[in-house]
Length: 117
Length: 114
Image 1 (cartoon, rainbow over the protein chains, first blue to last red):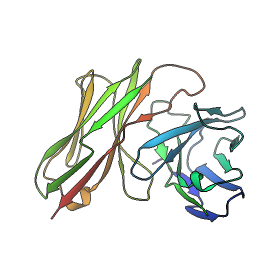
Image 2: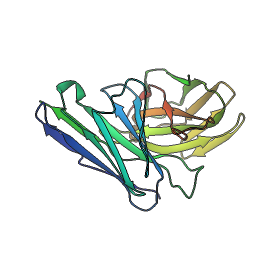
Image 3: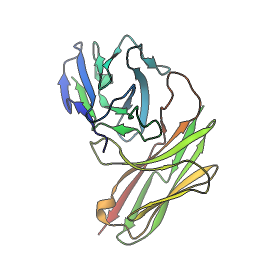
Image 4: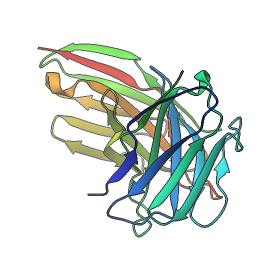
C-alpha cells in the first residue's frame, strides 16, 4: 500500500532556531502534499498545500514566511519552521495522494512532534 | 465553508458492547467522506471512503454508512484493540490549488474496556 514517511519523528529545539521536517512518498509519486498541524486533544488543521514545482498554498492565518514549504520533487516535500517559538510546539503531519490514482485516499505520515524550549 | 462535526467527543464501551459514532457535515459538493483511525502519537490510518448517499462499507467490526447530511461508523462487538480516536473528514468538489484537501472533524475518542 501507499506509504508516507516523515522525518524526524521527534525534535526538540531552542526558541529562535529553525527546524526542517521531511515528508516522502515511498512507493508513489505525489504532485500535491498537504501539511497539517494537530494540537493536543484537537483535530488536524490544514496549514498548507504543497505543490510540486510551484509555490505552496497557505490556509488563512498561517504565516508563509514562518512555515516555509518546498516541494522539489514528486516524492519529497519539506516544511521548515523558522525562528521557532514555544507556541509552535505541536504535532505536524504530512499527507499525500498517489498522482496516478486521483480518487485514492490521502495517506498520512506518522507525524513529527516538535517541542520548542 | 466546509464543516465537520463529530459526536460524541468521547465514548467508553465494554468489550462486546456495540455502538455508533456520528459525523455531521456541510460541504459544497461532496467529493468523498473519509474515516480514519488515529492512535496516540501516530498519523491517521485510512479506514473507509464513502462517495454517495446510501453507500456502505465494512471492514471487520466496523461499518460506515452515509446520508446526505451525516455518516455513521458502527462498531460491532468491539475489542480493546479498537480503542483509538476516530476521525471523519470531507473532501469538497471545488477546484483550485488546494484541490483534494480534507477538512477534519474533531474526532471521537473511543475506549473499549475488557
